[in-house]
Length: 114
Image 1 (tube, one colour):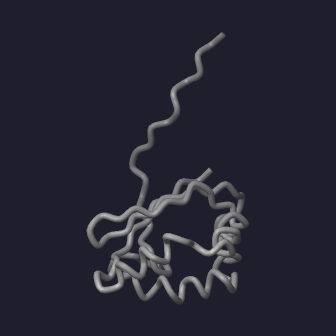
Image 2: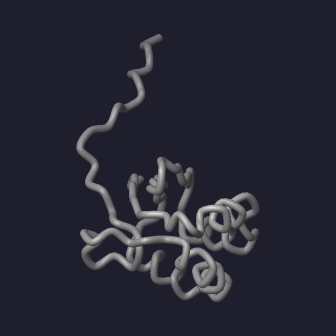
């Protein structure tokens, strides 16, 4: 499993629109995310900064992301959400969101021996 954290700015003038869209994410978009092996996807808001976290459970991240990006309903969704976002200057080759490096992770505690 791969954990992914990302961040992006939220345009203040589009805040209400973005929050409204995410109050009822389209079922087809959620289905496409599931088909791409994405689980436990959350988006958090702090001021005008969005922080996303998800877990990837597949075997070929690049291929699954390409399938997701080619999904017509996801493309329509992005036509609504992308204008609400302000990509950060350090996003590198990313389409929109800046991927954050993981520097620490607390693993589950060991199971007690029986």
